[in-house]
Image (cartoon, rainbow, N blue to C red; front, side, top):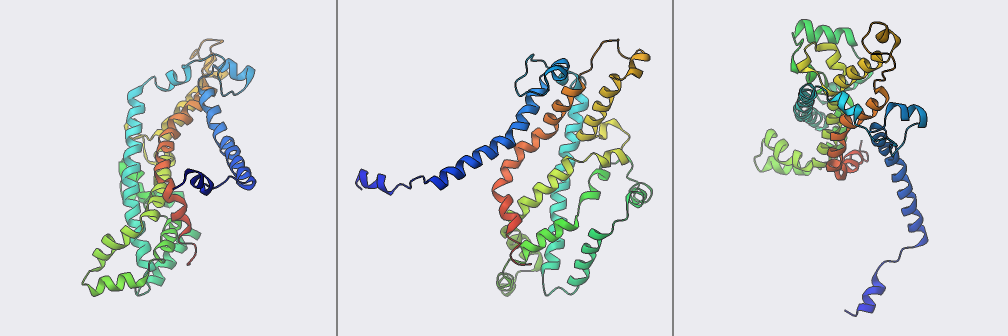
Length: 302
C-alpha cells in the first residue's frame, strides 16, 4: 500500500473530538486532584496544616502520622488479614447466594417465582432494625466474637438480587431449553452455562460485595470485643478517636501528654484514608471493563 495513501486513511482529530478529549482530561484531573491532596497532606506536619492548609506538596516532609498509626504493626496487620479474609469469603459466598436466588426468580417456569420476588422486594421496604438483628446474631446464633458475625449479615441484599435478576432475564430461553434437550440438569445449566454468560454481571456484583465488606466497621462495633477480630476500618476509627482525645485539654490535665505536645490527628486522618482505600484502588481497575456493562445490560429488559 502506498504510504501516502495510508496516511490519508488515518482518522483526523476534529474540533469536536478535541473538545471532548480536553473536557475528559479536565474531569479526570478534578477527580484525581483530591486524592493527590490527601497523599500530600498525610506527609505534612500538624503545624503546617494549621498554618498553610492542606497541600498536595508538603512544605516539611514528615512520617509522623504513619509512625503513630504503625506503632503496633502486628495489630494493623492482623486487622488487614481479618478484613481481607471476610471480604474474599463474604464476596464469594454472597455472589453465589445472590446469583442462585436471582436465577430462580428470573425463570418464568419456576412455580414460586412470584412469592420469592415479593419476599426479596418486601425486605427492601421494611427492615427489622438493629435490635432484632443483634438478638438474632448474639442470643439465637451465639456469634458474639465470632468471625461469622462479620460475614453473614451482608450475604444477600435485595438490590443486588434485583440487579442480577435484570441481567439473567436477558439470557435467551432457547439456550436453557436446548441444554435441557441435550440432557443437562438444572445445576449443570446454572454452573456451566448461566454463570459463564454472566461474567460481566458477576464482576460488578463482586465489586459491590467487596466494597461493602471492606468498608464495614459497624458489625465490628456491634459483635466484636476481641482486638484480634477487629476489621481495619474500625481499628482506624479507634486510633483516630484516641488521637483526638490526646489533643484535648482533659488529656493534658491528667498528664497523658505534655503541655505543648501536638499529636498528629489531622495528618493521621489522611494517612488512614491511604491505608484504608489503597487496596480497593488497586482492585477496582481489574473490574472496570465489566463494571458499566454489568450495570446497564439488564436495564433494557425489566
